[in-house]
Image (tube, rainbow, N blue to C red; front, side, top):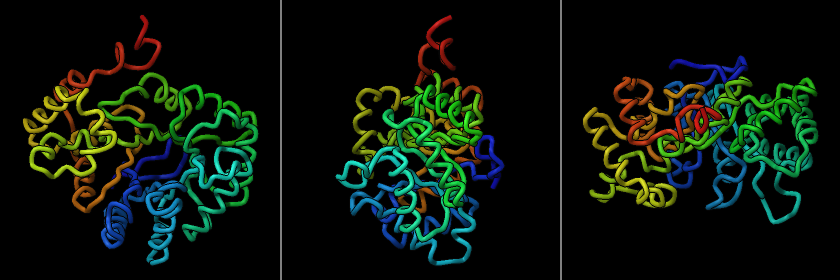
Length: 328
């Protein structure tokens, strides 16, 4: 496994991050533990979750599930770079959501308890909170890092100007600030190329694309629908987007067939090839899907293939960062 640095930090992470949204929910407990063990054995040391994941059973379930995996010992916790998130409501109580200092600190304590660990490597703001002053946010994060409960702070679903504002506020406090940003990014959804990725590259912030296959839309959905094997790709984001992108998806699956490559592997390889990207967040429901993600690490797309993909899924405007993408 070739490791990379998490943004401007000295922390080394694998070039793919194991997302846990499906573990213990869409995958059985036994298979979920096997996915985690296999990923770690194969060198994937970066694991991502969120305090609300597992809401299908109860909020906090996925963190508890990870805690059960760490409790099996064998250095599982020590070898893992662990990320979780704070923002979304964990109950109906008014102060049990957002990025107030109260909620940030309470949420961290709750996550530590659920996962049975003493520290979180990457504590991520799941969304920007426009009601929370940055001095309040950073004061809470500073408290947690000083206590040794949090090592680094990340963001998710931020706009470029949010990242800039947050970093400038952190710099005034002589605090490291944001080291990573999780954004939805794939061939179908390329908005972050305009300002988010340029802002991240400017500030030395790692880019961690979530939904790199657009919920299964880029994993061979037409073939799966035809042979009746579509599961996640037949619902949610993928199903909603299919009709508007059917022509492009048809061409995409033909291109993948011409390459002799699995569509999921091509889609993931494309995201990993993008400038500024550190590690896409994958969410396997089976060992086969995990193996496919590992194969994508070895798949190099040549210039002709990249150009064909740009033709099928054009970048926004003139392509590249703004303002050149929409102006001269």
